[in-house]
Image (tube, rainbow, N blue to C red; front, side, top):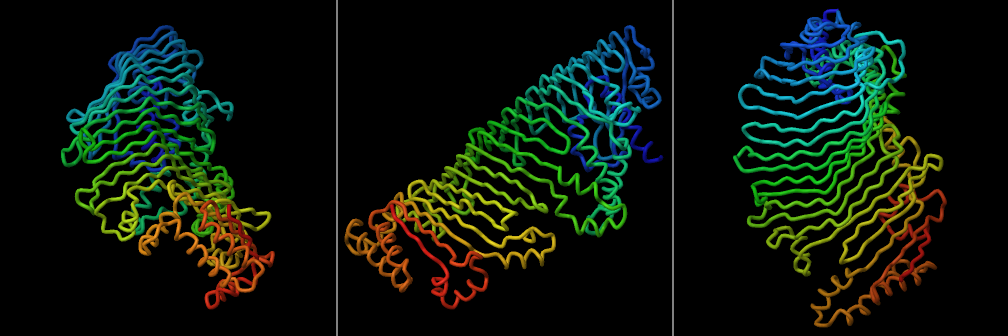
Length: 595
């Protein structure tokens, strides 16, 4: 009971102020919050000089008392509130702590209208100001919401009983006009924000109890030499956390962006601009996709010290569905052992990210006077089909990775590229692979590396005997399973867009001939080596001919290597090949073609 009171007092005070000012504690943010300072470190005081009510079931003095601390004893009255209008000129909330200056938030011109049975038709705040009395200040313009369900919100936090555990609309049509914040180091202009609807159901455990356990959990990790939380407290906390993140949903959230300028630690000018931000709607057990557009960071006013920008960044979100099921089966005892055995199953399914239009320009600290200038057209990572916390489906790609090669680099490989006349590269890659559980196979659909002006190499294939033990939480079992996999087939496709021309030009120059003269010579040597390596195999002539044609004429070279044993080539086969690579030739068929 002491914990309930210790946390419930400040929470009730802040919640009361929030209820009547629509500066609601952000339920979406609270749902993600797992680490909270001890309540004793932060105290809140609410001052409400004046309240005016019309046709209200709660008089003005009682409303002032509710807002300034006497909240829980009037929670039922507030949940059933009827009022034609409530006007509050100012609500002042002061936060204070041992390691911080007093922080004052003032809500001005709060108007609540058409309240029937705990549901307000509209709530408006004229403006909000913030200050710490010394260095920080901020202000926001009008905020408003419709259909604020005070009754349901109180029920969500556990302050009043609800007749139903179903989802109810908490508010609709929230708009925040934006504003600005100022510190000695930075000034930011903040854009407007909108969300169409937020709904929730009552928590199974009062929010005050959840916060109490969260505080105890944090304290236990601080007391532990290795920073590990107490497993028994974690076993109490996780079901509450799952209850919390499955207790609300929302419409998509939009934010018009932020524009900040100021100084870094050395006094140099810095600017950060973030364009429109869109967050998808929350659903029970999911963290939605977040898309950010038009971001730029510049060091110094003209970006001469460094700059970075991108057109868009998308964080594809998390899915907690499997973790919800796992935690539902968690035993009430032996928590420490259970966490050791199920740690990987508690990892949520991260869907991936994407980025486009990335550009950067920074000094090269390893080469004085040089700069690192690069751009990336797009990067995408998509993960899915999670098994024991590991994605069994992976798709990754990047296009137009443009990098200027430093002229005075000491890197030997970069020097060789510069010597061949390559001053910049345009690189891309693609990876697509997935595990087929029903076939015990891993399909490598694409593993491709490309340089726009040189060519590309693409590898595909099938890995056999890929059992579920590959994903085991037991590392020994996973290693044994990995050693038991086999190579069933391999396809290699090489596209020449100038690579052979570049490679042969150096050899041709050394011989004093042009590349066109050198090509048939090297093609003949390659054909002979291929036939010699493959010996008397039936595939030798076709492979040699295709390789010769590719070197002589360019184009595309395709190799298809298939195990003669449908099980595939195993570890023992490759170990034997370390002594004599030709032993593999008896176990595969090789098809080759040049176009």
